[in-house]
Image 1: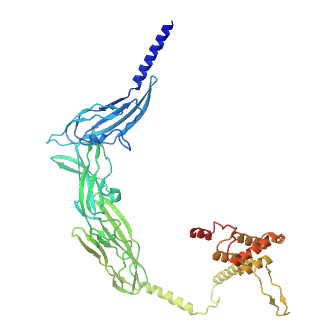
Image 2 (image 1 turned 45 degrees about the vertical axis):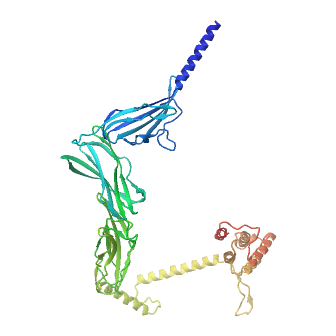
Length: 555
């Protein structure tokens, strides 16, 4: 019986050890979704690591799968990773999986190498890629290029990518955004243009062509490499294709030193509207000058220099209004300037032309675009209309200013009387309000003309108030405190004492409030501070006054 139990324990332990050994064994495998594809079709490579604490990574700071070994023969897509933990019959199995799409660069037979991780290796895989026969036409292909292979700095340049297809497409999208080197596209002035469509015959076969383009304004001289994005296609028959990147190189020439930042690079077109309303004496007439062309929206200043005009005309200019019209062929920038003329005399005047300097990219020289100024045929209507008003104003100025109601209607006299009444009422209210708010000030004794005796002042300041006023040398405590703080800075103790004296003299309970010994002592200390022109050493400044901020910044 004892031997039987020991045997059972030994068998169970052996099985448990065997089970844990089997369950702990990690596995690393590689597979592809198909072994034979046509050129341009993707192959999906999947790497799987089972029952390991390690997670597969092909990107980031410390990748443990090196996909760059495939770059010689394949265009490598963006890796996708997934991690999960499954519970299967009480056994924990972790799975880390990495998948990536591969596009062969050419036809032929290829071998995917083995990958290694944590001492484990995957098996090599073979792929057969078939290319089109020389006479065969592809269902989908792409072409890319630029409008000019040599441009000047800030010259309008168009980079384009055409996708040709002779089968219906379910979807088509670029894999990433256009890129440039050595200056990144984000640092260049550029605009993505609207897509355009056309039909084209290629080797006798009709193709539908979809163009995606970008307008670029290079800013640095030298070689500019443009990398047009790859295109991912899904046909109506669910065939997946990837069209590779299209590179292009442009040589950018340096502009002459005389070409400033505000100068147009390219040939502009100038137009203008007729002045409206029709020119007349002492009346504004406005017209608009428009400068447009394929140039940078940052070219041209906000205001054009005003040309010299004849003395009888005053000329004014507004700031420019800018806009860009984006079309399939590029960007057209429009800058509008508004001018206004105020003629002083009647007659005909030819205004000077508008001159806009620019750099001619075709000839490589500086030039000036000139637009003839408008001719102002100035009428005298405005002057004739204003003459009676001017005469009436001069006559009114020469008449006596005394008020008379003779010859006025009853309605007019009533309106004037009512206006005068309300004006007097408003003045009386304002006077009462000012008198109620004005602080008391010492009144000089006045002698009566009848008795010759001195009459007491209407308001005698409180003794504490009088002492502070004398120390400030001011007619009011508020004014004295403000002037003193402007010269010497804020002092919390001094202001607190002034506020206490103001409450004593003007507070709601002033009739029942008497000066305390503490307040009298505070007034004496305040007088010393006022006369010394300094602040008490033991009192901190008020941090919310402007003087306090300026003191902190100065220290």
